Length: 172
Image 1 (cartoon, one colour):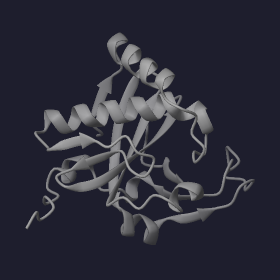
Image 2: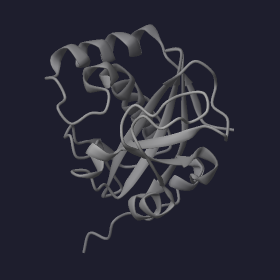
Image 3: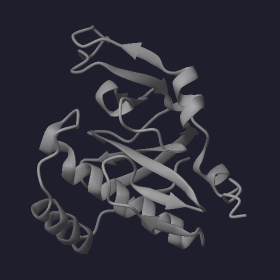
């Protein structure tokens, strides 16, 4: 259902080296705890883009992660203990929204640091119009919301194969 990729020892080594070379994040919901998961998601997204012949370059900024066909993309990742289903949710921390306005958000699940699932994507404006505001401390059934964020259900996302049809930015 979702494009998947196994995390290899080489992936782990490369991502660990990147984590160790980076400064602490000040504008991150998980602070430094999420760097490994985020960097792994970015690595696998880049590989998917290359495999599908998309023009993709990493920006390495805290505002967005990639330029794909001339448009900015921010990859959002979650670490999970089980493979993703449509009932799961994609989140963007409110602190990120204040400084990130990419053209697209791409959502990725990392399953037990073994498997990466590229779940889907939304244009920034689509995400903002569909997302529900989630308040820190609110009960969400099996968990409490840890930070103020905005969530959409995975079933609301565009599937990754449709990302291949996004037209390139007009360079004229």
